[in-house]
Length: 225
Image (cartoon, rainbow, N blue to C red; front, top):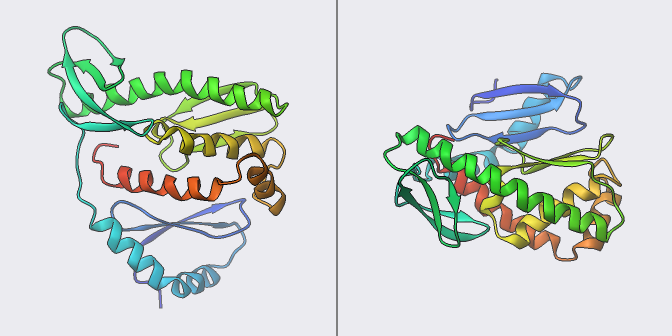
């Protein structure tokens, strides 16, 4: 009997099966290319209780949309979206300033553009600072629109990529993601050695990792992203 909750199966080079509940309550399953569908279904049934609990939690999240007057976290601190005259995109200590009279979709896009710009400066500086501290070489840092990953690392090219969404989290949580990606320069997998390296650099990384989940839920409740 097929698993009762609709899902999309994506075959990848990964070695394990990953389960993700999407905003609409459907599932995204990532599995190794040669794993039989019957084996995938077996795993889904074994995790059905967790899947249903997590799915119900996501479907119960109240949906909101960014607009003028919205309070949005920037490095963990609430910033108010403020309309300004002219074509201005500016982040202050307390405000996110964008042009006035924008349609809903353009409000969101203006804010995302500002987060990408500010994120590029902040994340590049912090990544280079920590890399230098630990004797690592980073070729470049980019900030993209990734929705499913906070960050990624191209080991061979020494390039690190972050999602602009990371800039909503507090500095200590952002630091965990930076450390996570830098550790991949030494260990390109998620082996025991990798996590030991992360812990060596950031002994309380587990608490910071847990804190990141709060922001995953935050984005689950946003429309237009």
